[in-house]
Length: 186
Image (cartoon, rainbow, N blue to C red; front, side, top):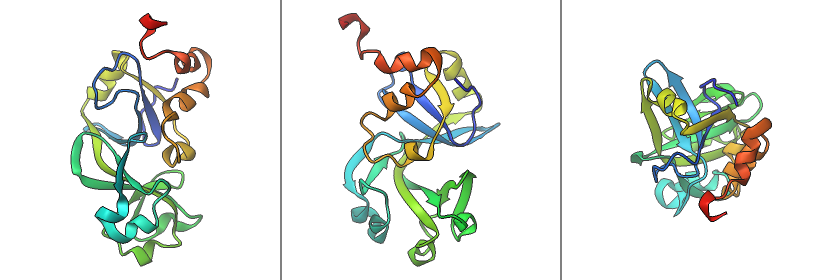
């Protein structure tokens, strides 16, 4: 397990994390600095089509073409995570985070984005932690920190994302993928 917190790392909720906002979640970290951390929950699709809220952006988002519940903070706001096309890392409205993954400013005219972005997912709200808060939660065993992959961010079926990410981890962490929801019922 990597303990390095940085953009592109994934937080996997452990069985000890009982907060309903994060139960069984996979969180993509977008920013980590001395003031805290910010991320989005990757495995909470809503039933609301992006096109109903953000019009034309619904035509360019990754399947499923719905908003994802990014976290409990600012649920009326939207964050767009995109994969830049090769050479598109300097496109208008795109802020690189790691590899070719970055944030896309949804105020950018869509016609300036077409061709510069290969994949796009939009999140309603985000998860945020103050200075030292996330590190404290990790120390308490609430989160596993692992490297993220581009396919995790844009997975079409996210129902089993947490288990899939856990299974590919080395050593004992992979065993967490087989843990039942309630071990006492095992």
